[in-house]
Length: 373
Image 1 (tube, one colour):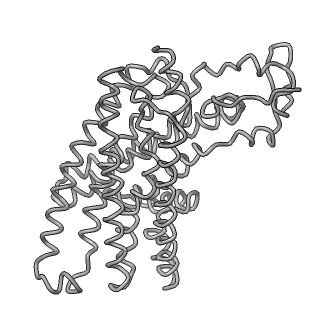
Image 2 (tube, one colour; image 1 turned 90 degrees about the vertical axis):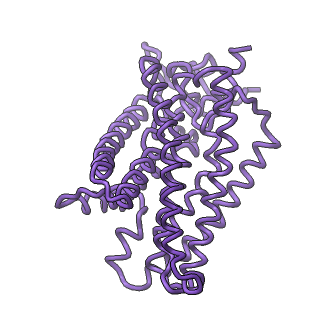
Image 3 (spheres, rainbow, N blue to C red; image 1 turned 60 degrees about the horizontal axis):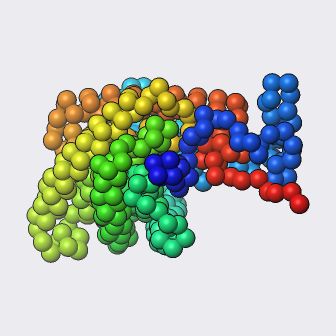
């Protein structure tokens, strides 16, 4: 039974790891595999063309641009700066086209805020539809068990949840008549994402109590649990701060913005504590299984959820005027930039060594060759 459950977990995880230590299955021996000819040599190695390997490119690669965009945003917000830091952040922004508000708007004309607003609404609509249909598919097409649960189950709601962070980021460049709907939608969908994550956390904790930690090759994904409370706390702080003064609700209710800012800060501190607990558990889990780990695309979870942890730490430090917290945020920034380069280096090496982007490897572990008649 345990073997069956572990197999189920590995193959239903959106970041399926290379659970067989990058060894090819018997059906990947020299010959024709699903139309891809695998050439062997005396050492049993195989080679596919770039075109053939790209057939095994999966959605799990989106964690790379997600992490890159997160680093660009973190570099824009880190409190202790030096000459050239903005240039470094701009490079990350260009690589990912993220952080448009922080890097693009100050350097362009009035047309960019309009373009950003249009992109925002397209993003909100499309990510909400993705969240609905992806979960509908999982509810109807897959028979998942609690024992197979990993934090990766949260990922379908992640994009729409980040609407709150995006809304807060662009609101300051928008006129009040456009700003209010953006802030309300950001709060709505950020809260939706956090609530869905909370529902799934109960399954995740129950799974660990009953079946223990995930397999070592999947433990990088444990850091995904850090993301929802961090990004929600961050969004609440920034959404409250972006509410226009003396307009609409705040005009009719003097002092209401101060109440919003205070409540947002309290909520962010509460959520930070939850994120810190998940971070500690995840870190111990990684250290306990470190000797059994090998690169998989799930390693990008070392970066993008923890970007939110660093940014919300910085924002709480700013709100409390706490120099120690701001220094903690700056140290976390340095660590995460170093981690980004570390994971990227391993990513490139894994592609070169045919450990990913290859039939039967990493997140493509469930791939089966076509049978020959």
